[in-house]
Amino acid sequence: MVISGRSWFTPGIPGIYVVLLCDVLKELGHDPAPLLRALDLRRDQLLAPECRLPMDRANLAAEAGLALVGGAGLGFRYAKAMRITLHGPLGLLALSSPTLDDGLDAARRYLGLRAPFLNVERELLGDHRQALCFRTDFGPGPVRSFVIESMVIGFVYMLEQLMEACPDGAEVHFQGRPPAHAEALRRAVPVPVHYGQPRDALILSADLLAARPRLADPQAEALAREQCELEFRRWRADQEGPLPERIRAALRDQDAPLPDLAEMAERLAVSPRTLKRHLQQAGLTYRQLQDEARYHQAKKLLTDRALRVSEVAYALGYNDVANFSRAFKRWSGKTPKGYRQGETRNEP
Picture 1 (tube, rainbow, N blue to C red):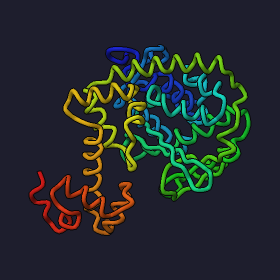
Picture 2: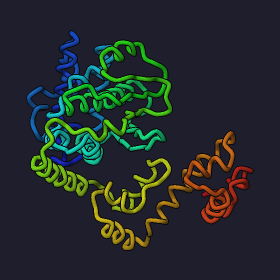
Picture 3: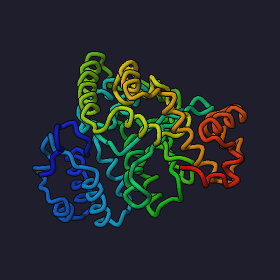
Picture 4: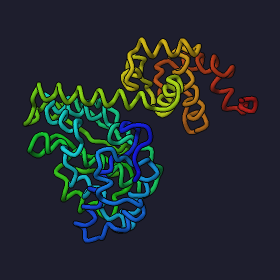
C-alpha cells in the first residue's frame, strides 16, 4: 500500500482522487483495472483516509487513465464528477464561507493539502474583475493538459456547487489551441470557455465574488478553518529543508512582482517574526533573497534580445529603468547592456 512517509500531512495526492478517476473511466466505458495494476493498489487501499500517492505515482495514474481514453476530454469530465464534499474540511470551509471570494481564498491557501502540484495566484484586471491563474509542476504534455483542464473546470463546478446555480460572471481562459474535444467541453461547462489566451485562468466578476454561498454558516466556517489551519501548519512543518531554502524555492518559482515578507510568511504558514528570525540565524535578509530571485529573473529575460532593457525592467516591477540598471550592476558588477554584450563569460 502506498501511504505517505512520516505522517498523514506529507505532500501527496489523496487516494480518493484516484478512486474518482477510476469511477470516471468506468462511466466512459473503460475498465480501470489497468490503472490499479499500474499502481499496484486496490480500491479499498486507495479509500483509506491516510492514503496519499507521491507525485510520481499520481503522474503514473494520470498517464494510465489518459492511455485508456486517448485523452478525449478526460479532464473536464473528471472535474464534473468531483464534488466539493470530497475535499474534507477544505470543502466544508468553502461551503460555509460568507462570500465566494472568501471561499476561493480558502481554497487557494489550503490547496497544497489536496493538490500540492498546483499553484493558483490572483491577478487584478482593469475592469473590476479578477483572474485566478493556474500553474502546475507537471511539464508540457498530455498529463499537464489533463491537470490544468480538470483543475480550472473543477473550480467552475465548485462555484456552481457553492451557489447551487450557474456562476454567471465567470469565464475560462486556456492557453494554446482548442483540443479536439473543445466543443464537447464548451457544451458541458456552464460558463464561456476561450482558447489562445495568455494564461490558464478563471476570470471572475466583482458581483460573482461578492455572492453568498447557499450554505454560508459562520460557526461551521470557524470550525472548518481551524481544522484546515491545523492540518496546514503540521503539513508545512513536515516539509524538508531549512526555511531559507524554502523561501528561495518559492521566490524562484514566483513571477514578478515578488511577494513581500508578510505574504511569504503566510504562504509558508509561519509568522513574519519567525521568518525573520530564521533568516537572521542564517545570516540573511528577505531583501537579499528577493534580490537573488530578481537577478535570476533579470538574467533569464536579458537573454531574449527581442526584449528592450526597459521591457525587462518593467517585467520585473521597476517603474524606472535607471533603478533597474543600478540594481543589476549592484548584483553583477555589469550594466544590463554590458551583460548582453557578451561579458557573461566571467559569470560564475
